[in-house]
Figure 1 (cartoon, rainbow, N blue to C red):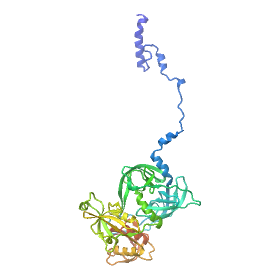
Figure 2 (tube, helix red, strand yellow; figure 1 turned 60 degrees about the vertical axis):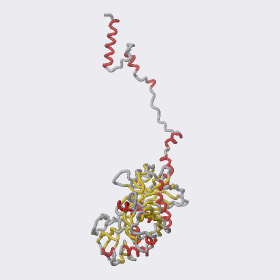
Figure 3 (cartoon, rainbow, N blue to C red; figure 1 turned 180 degrees about the horizontal axis):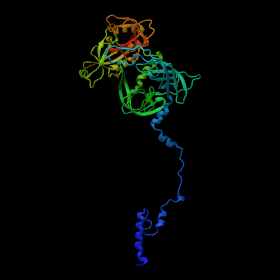
Figure 4 (cartoon, rainbow, N blue to C red; figure 1 turned 90 degrees about the horizontal axis):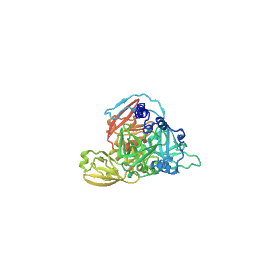
Amino acid sequence: MTIQAKRPLLLALFTGLMLFTGLPADGIIGHGHALAASQKTQPDPAQHHPPQEQDTRQSSSEVRARRTPVVRVVEEAGPAVVSIFSTRSQEPSPFSAVSSSQNQAIELGSQSPQQSTMQSLGSGIIIDGARALVLTNAHVILGATQVTVRLLGGREYRAKMVGADADTDLAVLRLELPSPPPVLPQVRLGNSSGLMIGESVIAIGNPYGLAHTVTTGVVSALDRSVSTGQTTATGLIQTDAAINPGSSGGPLLNALGKVVGINAAIFNRGQGLNFAIPINRATSILRELIAKGRLSHVWIGLAGEDMDQAQAVHFGLDRVRGMVVTEVLPGTPAAAAGIRTGDAVLTIDGNDVEEKAQCQLLMHAASKGGPIKMMLRRGRALIQVQVLPQILDKKSGRGLILQRWGFAPADDASRGAQVGEVRAGGPAADLGFKPGDVVHQVGARSITNESDLLSAFCRYQMHTTLIVTVQRGEQFTNVRLKI
């Protein structure tokens, strides 16, 4: 066989060898130049280009494209959000471990706790730059011996409390500015009554000291109630925008950059369950806090209970809501307005009443000096009444506490609310109260003076049972006061 005749056979064998060894064979098919084909697959160093350096320049069109509504909201509102650092001296409560659900009195030890200094974090918003006023939660600053406020740029100022109310958990601070005072930014307040479930919201705060942290979410629900012991916060905005310890007092903003809520609480047994106080409630309280330092104590003169399913059917309601009046005291504003036992309170000043706690809070936060408009159900009939609350001063408050709870504080009490008088046959007398006993807590409210006792009376004026902590000598006792 000649070489020319053997050439096809050699080509086939060589091709098979190339495929077996993993070398490319396509270059030799029809050409017979394996080496040239393999060289062809190698990168040409002359044609290899190093990676370009990162372009750090940003065109104005790119910046505009990336400036989302959230970015614009943060740029506008962020400078008016502040971090709040408060210092307080705290003496641990000797009765803090006592459960309010106990049915009988519990005696506590007489051990004297050590006083300690506690630092706490919070957030706030500048609501009036010209007057250097900051709105925050009351629990952020109540009891503080020193409050420091830090702005976005790092400037720090001492602050003094202008007014606070523990029941609504709102407080107003005034910054102590140098002279001449700097120009301060301020937020824009929105309207929380028009919030929609599913609407986008932005939270800004100081969680764990991480200043001006921004989180986003939606309005998950409206008119939520959150129970904390004997206190129930009602009418809250629920959101899944993250709110963590230190964020309390910061703003919840809508997509227009307006404040629609004040971040206040988290549900620590779940994730994405956060709550804010509607801004409309806050603005209705601000004027009185700024003018008087506190909300006036009011007396209506009725008691009530949460509505149940059977009562809702009786009143012809589409769902369980409202408060059923269980008692109307004679000679009181409620009696003068024509409210009767068995009526159902559905709205107060246009705000829906979901439960007794919300009814009490709405009356507490209502405008003082004018009537409260209440919508009632009497059977299946709708009735609107106007109640003119009685503003309680020290004298009238003492008289009502003696009448309803059966004891009155002493005039010269130097600690707590020392019992000065016990009414025979009253609720306190039935429990064995004696002059000289000291009341330290009513419900969830700590009592340090007579003013605290009056606040607690107004807070719980619709309750028919309360847990009261009383000291006699060195012993502390938890008792159930039935009114």
